[in-house]
Length: 604
Image (cartoon, rainbow, N blue to C red; front, side, top):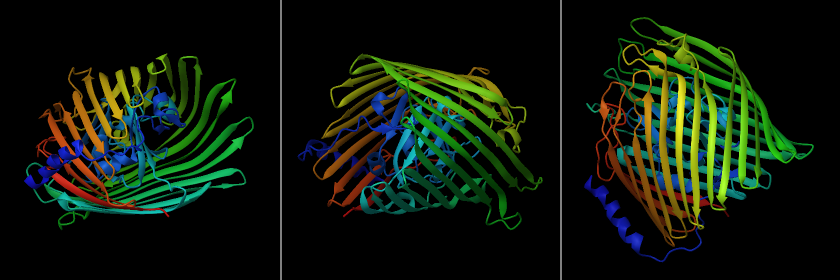
């Protein structure tokens, strides 16, 4: 373990020496698409958004996107052990299924209380991740009560290009990624293959054997113009095996996750555009107990599928920017579990149809956006949600914004019809409000402060004894603050969150949500070297079994050398102080660890 501490020591001299590069652009104002369903600079977006860039991903060297999300204040991540183990993501105190995950705009959900199997989403194919905190149900529909995580995959730059990355490190980590693509004007194609093999560590505090993880991910995307018509496609396929421990027995889970989209874009009269897309996602999970001849090898099998069609048009009418659309989709679950008490079979489907309208405009110093969605749900009938956002520029560099929205979240199919389901569950309905301030300080600094309040009626919780879901009420309110500085030499990011997630029925706190968190990073750029330090701290919280999970602090460090215009070497150390902490009671987290990545990017 002590050999890993050298990373913390070697970064300090770099922070004070070497001539600095003068041509690195600021990253304070990237382009996002999640807030308004269209491209918009971050400084013009009214809700709170954090963008994880490609540079962030390469510096942090994550195994999956959960390793990136957990360092954002206001986002809590719980993991049942190490790499590949089940992950839950809570944004601003909401449930894990209150976060809508999308890949290139395609909804990724499992129709279970875990919502999305984010542990299967590997990082090498990702260009950026947009994390919107706050309700977005009117714009994106059910699942978006707490927030939206939109994963944008990489596309080929102009010309021919390719890349290779090799990563190795603690816990037997071996990770290889190969990328290649071509772009000629409006025509492009890109392919990325990533193969992960991680020996892991015992998932439980009590010990046991290492729980390994294997994941092979293929990502394809492309597009072309034909006679003024635009055609695009995206497809992501992840398959592999994760070992885990359950009820004292060694088990494994084979997974196969697919997400895809075909899209057609055509111009309409009057500078309007129409986009029609067909989308699908499917997760297949087989749980196995390979070494017990007394029981069936296959313990359970589930296949969860979602597919649909969406049409969206956008343009201007009387100077007001409008977006309107219609969608129809079907979700289905087909699962069976085998046990000595008998087999449990779940086969259910649900259909949804929805229409939405969004209007935005600017009058002098005022920005305004209003949106509404009508949903026709097979089980729960008609539901209408909406939002109103107003921003006022006190000065060219100072803006305040007020946001209000209503949300709707249907119970997942396993909540209703699973082995421990409750068919009498009612859908969750939310009211959310946010007041934020953004202050730009010169060209290189920005400060944002947000106050938020989320109230959820018919909030779905699980009885820790019977495991049955039931309806309650909840309220989460809190404060977030962030300071950013970015110039040619330095990059600083300091942010913190205070929140109070309350179960208003029992008067207790919602489990696995921290009440306070703090994140700080400092990076120093040089001609051929970049170094960084990261500090993350999180307060205590309660688990579902009433165990108190203590607060903790982590120190990470990294160094990147640009060996040539095409070749980079990155070294990263995590949890350098070797803190022992838990995100779920009795489940271990990684001790002090180190990783090395060699990247080669090719473009003639």
